[in-house]
Amino acid sequence: MADIVWAIGLMSGTSMDGIDAALIRTDGEKVFDFGPALSIAYEQPFQDRIRAVLGLRETNDTVNALEEEITLKHADAVKALLEKAGISAAEVAYIGFHGQTINHVPSDRFTWQLGKGALLARETGIPVVYDFRSQDVAAGGEGAPLAPVYHGALALGLEKPVVFVNIGGVSNITYVGSDGGLIAFDTGPGNGLMDDLMLEVAGQAYDEAGKTAAKGQVDRAVLSELMDHPYFRRKPPKSLDRHDFSKDPVEGLALEDAMATLAAFTKTAILRAMDYLPERPRTWLICGGGRHNATLMGMMRRKLPGTVEPVDLLGLDGDMIEAQAFALMAVRSARGLPISFPKTTNAPRPLAGGHLVKPDWI
Ligand SMILES: Nc1ncnc2c1ncn2[C@@H]1O[C@H](COP(=O)(O)OP(=O)(O)OP(=O)(O)O)[C@@H](O)[C@H]1O
Ligand SMILES: CC(=O)N[C@H]1[C@@H]2OC[C@@H](O2)[C@@H](O)[C@@H]1O[C@H](C)C(=O)O
Image (cartoon, rainbow, N blue to C red):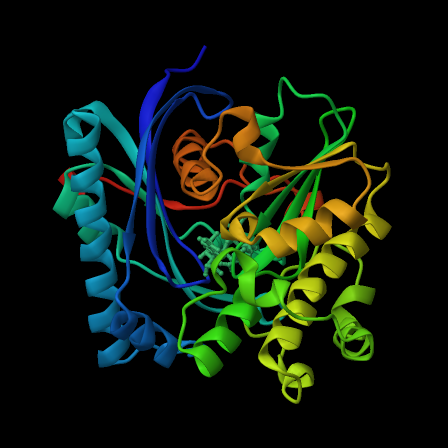
């Protein structure tokens, strides 16, 4: 059996709300222990600086300075996590450093996550695996979603078919079939459009517990218009950039109705994903910040077949699944095990992505 090691996963997602950091003990196949986890929030001005570079294709001084700051914030998250766990850097075999996605256009074989792996290794003294998506995209894959290999590990003891649904800025699902086979893809919007509207109209980062949406009515005509997007007719594997959908169709609605309609959009896109699954799932395990939106959770419970529950019901921390996933992927990458597959990213064959950099190489 391969060595079981402690690894730290770091994720700063498309919501741009901050960094999640989590420790797990793993051999790259299974999770043997869950260590502590924590989040570091990005202040609104820092989020605005990230927003300002979204969609760029080339670096410049501004991007370079931002990338360095993002990396140093990740180093702070690692230091805080080690302190919380009461362990030293020497006891951690790898850090999986996702970085901040600022542009994702797999059709152009282009994806870009800001994060300087060598700087993080030097700052923390821990080997770092970073740039997880480039190899997949270069080989013609979607470069996302990558968490499915971790969902597959979590599903080892569960009754199948089971679906993991991650509702972050964008939503993605991993279907684990009766035979343990994985099918994964981005389903459509997550919280991104809802967050944008709340910020624009109410000056709030998100719709706390979905309270604004709860007061509104879904506008069926607008929902149909939103669902009439070519992405939903595309067969998976497929992935999205945060800005692939527009909230323009809800613009004329009252805020409450607009939020209800956007929540219904996220739910309906997840429901539509069933068209591409070979069997009806029995259980939907919801991860990511969207599970805190009670209105969205209620809509999913009413429409999806089987049970819809936050993944926390299994004793997991639903806010930390993606961070933990990159800890597992760091170990897999360093050991040459694949992290993406033909049915999760459209990779031509199972691929081990990521680059390893060790502090003593610098
Ligand atoms: N209490 C809450 N009530 C309602 N929504 C919430 C709450 N807490 C978090 N959220 C939503 O969850 C979002 C953050 O989710 P998460 O951290 O899973 O996203 P992410 O990891 O950045 O995105 P992605 O998975 O797309 O990379 C927030 O922007 C917000 O919309
Ligand atoms: C390019 C990119 O950063 N994609 C993210 C994003 O956020 C959710 C969804 O879109 C997913 O495809 C992916 O992240 C998760 C961690 C993944 O790769 O599984």
